[in-house]
Length: 394
Length: 176
Image 1: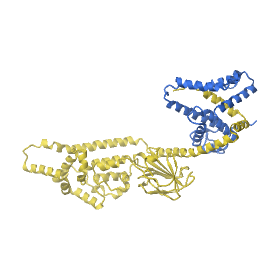
Image 2: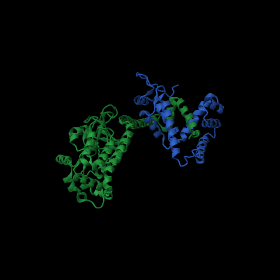
Image 3: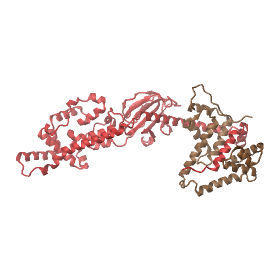
Image 4: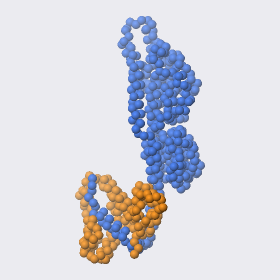
């Protein structure tokens, strides 16, 4: 919408031209006449300019960081492709689950009432197994699965579904090295490959698990501790979704989510969903807050430990930015990036996976810092956010 | 006669089209007292119709220049460039204020016209005792410049220049 020119704007333009055309002596004399001192307005200008300079520095640096973060941000083009792959995975897993569950659902109607004694005994076994799945599973799992369980128990890391580990390994070169070779892992077997009791136990559990309401499944979580591989596909899928929130394939994202916490005890829906909840950050160091804006400047003696605010992946560590000196950018899940500037020494490098609380740098006064301090920012999808919303109070 | 300086910025670097923020900072530091005083007066003129005062306006202008948000063509003098930035930001702030106003859908609404008429009337009332000055001010409000204004006043060049100075001083004092 165009607005009519304001007559007073025309007047201001004309008067401004007069001011610029006026002799310097007259301008200063007018200032002396109005304010009692011909330097009064010039002094006021100097104060304004000083404030502007202080205000401009973080703006300029924020722009630079924004540009840097934008440059380091993954290209958007592969995200739709990842979403498509995720959608395809959902369809495949859901279809597979349905294919395996459907016969069990239809079984009561399909089996004729006068069953033979062995068949009736088998059905009884299935029912008993479904009711006491913990005991049945322990006794009836396939030998490969039993070996897998023993391996996991020996590792003392809680239950890690085999497919979970495969998923993690696919994202983590380090874990690929640590994980057993794929051949040793129990691949999902067709029903005919497993022993009959084991297969019946597994089917019984699959049917019970998938037909129960979500709340009941949560209540049954302890019983699912030793759930066989097929039940864990949802878990694997959630891990995959969680992995997708990280922008760099090839990273052990599930480990980044809860570094110090043990692996989930129950591979049901509860633990993975809780890990997908909001991300929180810790203060990288404590000290007097010098300035707040798009980030926080915290005073700290040189050499103070600067700790990672959350688990993440170092995407930049260098001194290319003259303003922030030694600068570290850490990408976290959900598109968050934290920024650590003015550091005297960087203890991590790009590509390092870091844990919450890990010392990643020493504070200092590099770049344009006037005194030893840390510049800390939290960005969401490149744009800075108010750190106070994510940091604990106090 | 010494006039308000127009800072020429010399550099030995390969010619870039615009000053870098660091060069802009040097150029601002190099302003004379008269330049700074003139810019303060100019900021006061343009801040009148914004929600902020002239110091805020000038600070924002300098901040944007120092942050590199405003490209400073190398051939443009400092005061002239900063005047343009101040004018631009004032216009931006005024537009934002209008957009936030309840009758933003009708920026030329009756109430706004009434306020504008009041402001114009207040300015014209300053020159009720001076028909020549009032004619010049009316011409300024209509966007007339230079020889056209002089013709409206019916004064010779010397008297016209003197009258314009008198007009400016009266309006400046109105805002003090």
